[in-house]
Amino acid sequence: MLFPIGDDNSNRSTFPVVNTTLIVMNILVYLYQMTHPNFTYGYSVVPAEITSGRDISGMIEIGRNQLQLFRGPNPVYLTILSAMFMHGGLSHIGGNMLYLWIFGDNVEDRMGHVKYLIFYLLCGVLASVAHIAVAPNSLIPSLGASGAIAGVLGAYLVLFPRQGVRVFQFGRVVEMPALIVIGLWGLLQFINGFGELQTAGQRGGVAYMAHIGGFVAGLVLVFVFRNPDNRPYRRGPNHWR
Image (cartoon, rainbow, N blue to C red; front, side, top):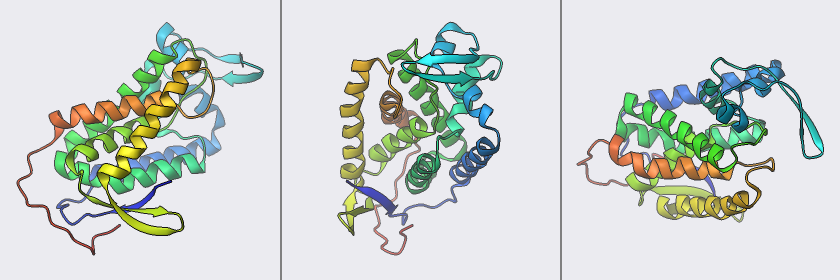
C-alpha cells in the first residue's frame, strides 16, 4: 500500500490561503461534532432526503441496526455542503486532511485562490450527486471531504503527472511520480466502486461512488479552472513537506 507523506513544492509560487482555510474549517467542524453529536446526524447527506426533498428525523431501521436522525438545515439540500466539512472519526479526518495538505496547495497555485475554492466545492457537490445516484433511497448518512479531495487528486494528476511524491511503503520512504501514486489510488476506487454498485450503496462504510464522482469531476473540470503555466519544470529536493 502507498501512503503519501509529501510532495515536491519547488514550483509553487503562492501561499495556499484557501487550502489552509479549508483544513482549519474541517478541523473546527470536527471539534464541534465531538461536543454536538446530534449535529452529525442532522447535517450529513441522507440520499433519501435529497431525492424526496424532505427532512427525515426520528428512529430508523437500517438492516438489523437502528439509527436516529435529527432535523437538519432548511432546505435539506444544504446538507450536501455541510457534509463536506464533517467527518466520522480521527482516522477519517486525519487521512483526508493529510491528502488535502499534500496535494491541494499545488492545485490552488495553478488555479488561483477563488477558482480553486469554486472547483473544490463543485467537486464535492458532484461527488455527493454520484453517491445519491447510486443509492437514491438510502437512509445511511454520508459525510466527509473525501469527494472534494478526490477532485483535487484528479486535478493534480492532470496538472502534475511527473511531480515527485514521497510515499511510505513496506517500512521505508520512496519517491514515485504522481501518475503512479494517484493513478493506483483512482484504480482502487473504481474497483471498490463496482462492489458498491452491487449493493446499491445500502451498506455502511466508504462511499466509493462519491470518490469516483469527485475524481472524475476533477479530471474534467481542471481544464476549465486551471491557469496556463509556462514555467519550466524544476526539481527542488528541499521543498518536501
